Length: 100
Image (cartoon, rainbow, N blue to C red):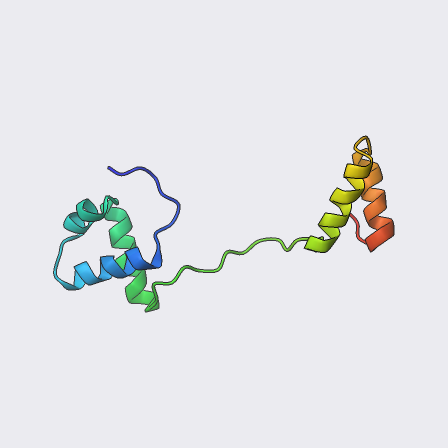
């Protein structure tokens, strides 16, 4: 069996579908691409139901600070490296009006 991989690329999924359309079995495709047959089955099943092989956008919590604000905080900490975390939070609250 192959090692665990995080995500199949769009190119790899298209290749899986192409091989499947050429009447290759799940096991043959799995051995060719060094993936599990369950992964191959899942990709083919999903492509039939969704008609799409692109990766879905990941959800997640939005950042509280902008990149510019992060740079300003790093600059302040470099000026005074002994600043405690509560003081940094107070600086953020005073400067940007954001609670962290």
